[in-house]
Length: 306
Image (cartoon, rainbow, N blue to C red; front, side, top):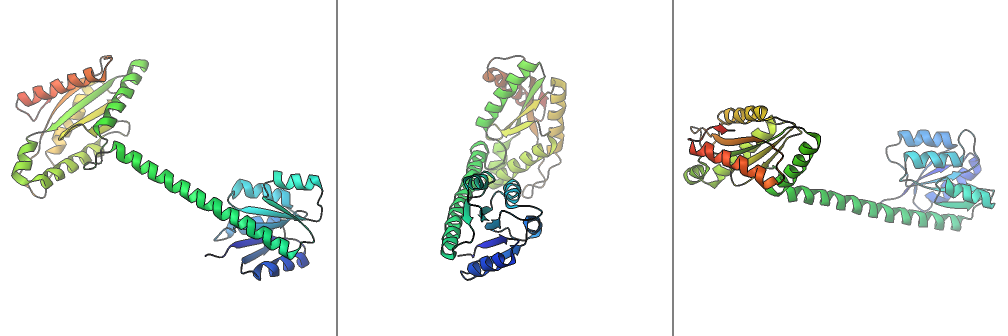
């Protein structure tokens, strides 16, 4: 178990030594500062923040209340116990309002001090464990969410997420009267690639083509794996003529790709491009671009229809 780090902030040399000796006798790592200003400078430059600060209230430069407020703003993970010879109700309320977790009267009783310190550090450890657990859970949830919308082989978004995004973009295009185009691309003779070279080579082709798409699209565009060897691209704020240009560029880019296990073969694309025409249903928009893709295939492949 790691030893807890404690910072003592006390302008009285006598009180500072008593606190230090009491805590070091219980194997805590103890640092000291003579006032709030020195404590803030220590926190700014230290390699590891203390788990707990025990501070007097009445000090020159920066008193305990002000120190407590500044620490809560800058280092909210540090717990603070305030010490004072003034034990009235106002001092107690002001201590907790400034962010202290506990309050101890001077002159302090060593046994009480150690019990208070032990209790505060126990609470801090529990909070730290809970915080770490919540952060880990959030990280896992983000990973699961990403996995739920991502095609494992290509790293692109999957068909389900594509449909959701297309619905969203259709709504935005209709509401704000902005152009929206989609491209449906299919790798020509992909079954022949699998049959001739094996599925591992086919997987390599899919992954490399997917990377090509990502490298040449804008951040605002959406590219995903629509089917086995089909890819759907959603081009936001893009009229038809620009969409056609993008699709034709991709069919030029893909011919320049080299594949390790089929070096002599050039891969081509067939595709369809269409612009949003205020279709109410996503299915109707997709049906139009799908029809254009099949026209490209029937007209000899390696071409873009629009």
